[in-house]
Length: 196
Image (cartoon, rainbow, N blue to C red):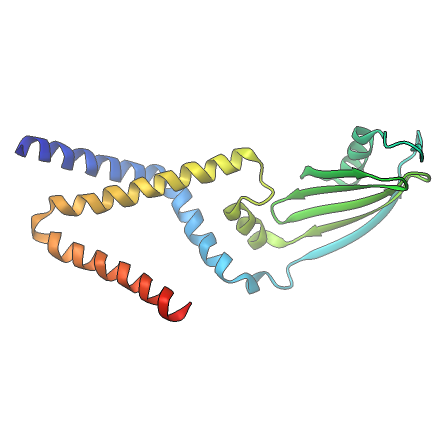
């Protein structure tokens, strides 16, 4: 039994240390952005809005059809205005097309007249704090980043649980460690019930 306890303690410590080191960047990033999300007023005044206009030449759009060359429109706007964000929406009605590109801390929304090919595009850049806040939330980031958030959360759970489990193998510090854990839990509950 003692040998099993020693092995569990060794593996718990090993997993905790190396998972902590492996996930250090993710834990630090989500901790920092947790603070910036809590203080959204820090990004006030950082937003830059630019309005541009232009014309898409070449084949005109048929007014009586919903068929338009979406790829041509998207690529024209991307190349002309250096848009790198993902296309999030493209809608077509009788008189115009609306196109929306979105990325962390960034959006570009355009309206294209189907008869004349003239368009207006509003580009909004919100600064680096808005970018990291959007990354924290997974807003307009794509599936790869959403997977990173899920994996980071799983690693944080494992780091927390193995850290908690380690206290049970430290006889001299077990009681004080569990009391501190209980105090932390009660503090969170008190803040929620009394101040929220």
